[in-house]
Length: 401
Image (cartoon, rainbow, N blue to C red; front, side, top):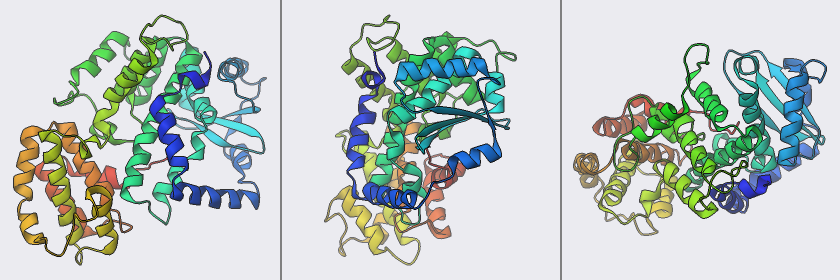
């Protein structure tokens, strides 16, 4: 089983589509032009700010890297680095000068077992093998020219599936699902086995207790996890358990087909995607109605509705969704009733989904003003969503590791 055979189907399909998007092409052309003028100095910066892990200094880590390189079919020479940090973190950089660079935090190397490190190593190399750096998500979402809201939401969704592919690459290298789950547990909790006794069954049970679908998530999970570019711990473990039970898992214990696996993974991540925009259910309709009215209220909060904001309506609700005949004040007066309808029909993660999409779409004209943020906070309050969630949705970093 090679790396391409285990790649998440939604990652590949979204990746292929995004590569052809005009904004992605535009940014990639600008990056290529900049790189043609001279190296980006990735290696120079790594040598200056971290320690290169040579074979003589770290023979065990070098051996892990060799095994992952062979399993994943990495062709470029690999250099490993470590930097001082109390946070568990790792990153794979876009190749430079025909070399590949992977960096680890010091706490991760000291706190993870060999098999856990092998999962992290494989995960980072997976980003390279699947060429995830070809979608410059950081430049697109945080650059001077903001993407339209629809593209932004597509980038969020793709990046989560890209993490699923990288997780599979890591599991393919580690071949130890208990160690994989324990690594994710450590990454999300900051704890090590020296403090708690980890149980895979208990951790997976936590996922089941979230009661996905129309029920609220468990009290132990971080609300921000549901709407990040990285679907952390519980959702990732659930997706990896499905991978383990499939015919794609390297140890060959599973029997479910690849199509069954991908349907299962899509179900796991469905709460993080704006599928309600197309769904034909009463819940989805209530969510769309609130999104429509909420966007009008936010757009009108500062000096009326701009042309850029009008384009949002066209992209999400159709060319004729907004017109001069709409009574904006009456629509705004319906928001409390629409909020009540969503509260009655939708689960907490679904309500957070609408709020997250409102935050993303409200940045159509380049940012969010104080008055627009107040409008967002009023809607969040009605949905019983902490105002801190708005700050996270608007201000959080959106780059792949």
